[in-house]
Each structure stands twice: as structure tokens, then as C-alpha cells.
Length: 547
Image 1: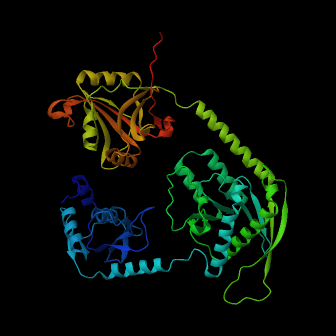
Image 2 (image 1 turned 90 degrees about the vertical axis):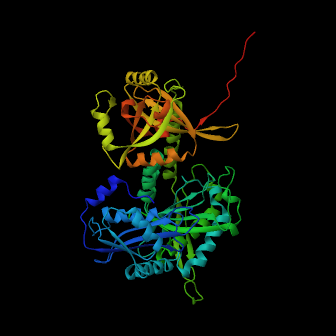
Image 3 (image 1 turned 30 degrees about the vertical axis):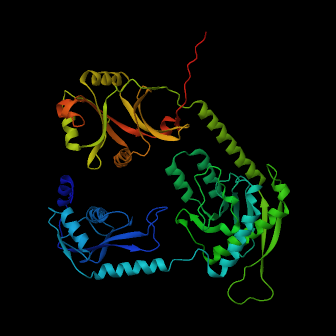
């Protein structure tokens, strides 16, 4: 059984120990999935300070994760607890699972924490009961009085296929006549055949701001942030009780019948993020908007098919959906005005065309530096590893070792490293060439594929500060070593060190001694976008002899 690393133990033992007793457990909460697409129910890990009655840490994990997960949450409870708790080390821990007790005794040895067993944990039991009740009472996606009407209208819109005519640049203004008029700006998704639905913005500013960011931003993190900052309602369509082959590039959700489609309603707001349900007032507004939009579409389908639709406007009297069990013979209606916005549509189309022109320019200026394969000698040994910070300091102070210091700030327990081990003469040639090109700018793990065998691979590419590109090595596409190592790099601000060492033969292979180290280059991970290379493809080369 593994215990915590020595440096972690030392770090935790520096945290003051309090005369407190903590309770901890992990249990399944049905219907809660820790990760998108997880095939198993989620398990909730909770650590409570029984002395003060506060939750110090709580995590959702996959049921497939081992007992190490409960230790990770415990360390979080000790070092970074939920507010208002402060960092602290308990005197005693109580669990109600014997296996967890024995595992914790091994993992937490030398931390001066007693690990006890108790058949009942009142605080934990009560908290889990509360969580289960919360999930059982989750708000329905659509209020019951509107569920039938909204779902029926959504499936009608699916059959109508408005996306066959309207693009996402065709913005339709909808004004609902109430005491305080409601203005909505709707667009249709589906022209590209990737996802289908309707977005109903609550303000024109939100629509414009999101479109501008999407057309200009390339960072996935910033795009996700922009997505969550939208102010709108949405209706999306998903496959219902059907497993389509989404990996099939030719698959189109529209090929499914309405019986195989599930409408998904929700809301996006900067303060709420994504909310997968509508309240009664929202459900009514969405129903009136979509019903009026459907009628407007069929009244002006030919005009809406124009590249820039003309200025059209019409007001509809839309019946309110039946609410409750009783309804009067004379059904109430609401006036809903629907209009095209040709100026805005033209503006959005122009922005899209400018972006496409910029992309064409980028394609013309794509990174075209040839990949050289003469930097790393054949039969070199390459290893992904972690170097303790104490060892890094020793290397820095050794005048015999060339050290390219980029000012990396220590983060985490160790420095990620790539070891390149060869002979002394060849190692010195590598160092000399890198010095001539002002060091290593970064290393990228670029995807590649063989279109003839459909084999996927990954190329490690070294980019120097002078702009040259060298092949480090070829790796398996899903090499777990690289994936795990890159995760450590991410926690270290994408920084790591390249170690050039001799001693590739004999017992020192893969385990160089300090006197084998020739040079270290601090550098960082580069993304594929940084190099602008895309997926590299193996292409045949033919040699022709001219007679």
C-alpha cells in the first residue's frame, strides 16, 4: 500500500493540528454523472468537521475511481477547505467503511492522525439524505402546465425544418405585447447540418457581442466563457433513445424522425451560466415566440429564402397554451409582432465573410518551416519524468552544466522533464546547435495520421527561438505516459525542462547520474495552434528517373 510522498507529508505536517474529529465517506448518488458521457453514476466524497459541523471538502467522482480519490479530497479538506473553514489537520478521522479505514491508515501514516471506524456517522448520513432529496426534487425542464404544448410545438418545428431556409445570420425580431413589451431576437441553427435548434436572445447587445467574439476568438477557453455569458433562451434537439454514429462525418441528425428526437429547453445568462429548465413565465414567452416564428416562416418562406431578406413585419394573435385542468371556451390570445432585420443580417454576413477572408490569408501564411530530423541522433533514449525542485536547484548551481534559465516559478511537487540521453559527443552537438538558435522556444505534440492505413500517431516537435523545427520523436497517438505528463505540465503553467545527458549505454540508460547531465533548457508546451500545422499526413514520395 502506497503512502503519501515524503515532501507531501512534510507539507501537511506543517499545517497546525486541531483537536477535532472529522467524518468522511463516499456514496453513490443516483442520476448524478461526474463527467460528460460517464457510463456510471457519480459518487460523492464528503469530509465534515464533526466538531464544528461544517463541510470541509466535497467532490463528485466516477464510481470507477479507486480509494485514492477519497485521499485526494481529504488533502483538499486539510489544505484548501471550503469557506469559512481554515487549513487544519484533524486529530482523528472516523469512517464507516472498513476498507476505507485500512486504506487511509496506510496512506496517512506518519501524519499523526488516528483513523477510527464507526458503524454510524450521523452528520454524514444526514447530509447524504439531504443531497439525495435535492436531486429527487430537481426542477422539471418545463413547467407541467406547458410541457405538452411546448414539446408538441418543438416537434412541429423539427418537422418544418426552418434551417433549410434560414441561416444563423438571419435574425428575426419578436415583440410580445404585454404590460411591459418583451423584445426577443431569434436565430435558427441547422444550416451547417451539425446541430439544430433556436436561440432567442433577450437583448440585441448580447447577440452582437457573442457573434463578434465567436468570429474573432480562437481560444477554446475564451469561447466557452463567451458561450456561458450569453443572455438567451434556447431550444436544441437531441437523439432520443437512439445511438447515432456521431463519428460518421456523413451523419445528419435531421435524418431522424420526430419520434427519435428529444427537444431540450433551457436558458443562458452571465450570472447563471447554463440552466436546463424554464420557469412558467419563461415557458410562456418561449412558446409565444416560437409559435409566432413558425407562422411567420410559412407566410414568407419564399422571401426568407433570399440572401438578404427584405424588410417584412406581421403581427399574430397567438393563443395561450392551456394551463391547469380548466380552461374557458374563449381562449385568451396575445399579440406577437415578428419582423426581419435586413440591416443586421447584412452586417452579420459581412462579418462572416471578413472572417473567412482572414482564414484564407492565415492558410496562405501557415507555418511552412520544414521539419528537420537531424537534431536528435538515432538510438537516443527519450524519457518523460519528474525532477524534484531540490534537484533542479542543484543543477542550476553546477557550473559544469549548461542551464538555460527561463525563470520558471516552481509549482506543484516537481518539475516535469523530457530526458534526451545519448553519447557525450552527440549530446554536445545538440547543445551547440540549440545555443546557436538561442535555445528552445517550446515543444509541441502534433497529431498525425496515415490516410492509407488510418493509423494515428503523435509527433514531438521542437521549435527553437530562431524558428527552426526539429523532430523529437514519434509517439503513439494515445500514449498514456505523454497524456499524464502533459497534465502535470498544465499544473506547472505549461512549463518543463529538456535535459540533455550522456550515458545512453549500460546501467545508466534511462537513469543518468548527476555527472551525466550536460545541459538543461527550460521551456514550455506549445499548442498545435501555436505552430499552425494542423494534422500532419503521411504522403507517398515517388522518385522518377528521366531517361
